[in-house]
Amino acid sequence: MYRLDESELEHSLYLINKNFGYNLKPARYHWYVETIRFDPYNSHFDNIPFYDIREKIYKILEKYTVGYSLLKNDKWIPISRDEALRNG
Image 1 (cartoon, rainbow, N blue to C red):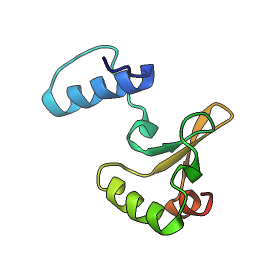
Image 2: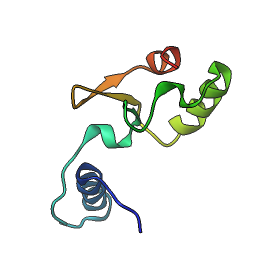
Image 3: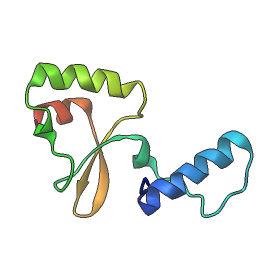
């Protein structure tokens, strides 16, 4: 069984509605869901320890995402690719 956070579920329903013409509830756009997300609990910048490997992995992930974000004070904020690379 796979568990989605509430925002991930809402955003998934938003994308289904947008792409397939449904009207599923509770659909809601959450910009950060499609980003590479970093947070102090689950996903640290240094989880991939070497800069050159991290850079190559980010290039692969960028094909399927729309940017980077960081959880700070319980809010997602956009960050740049360079910030994600430098902080690792």
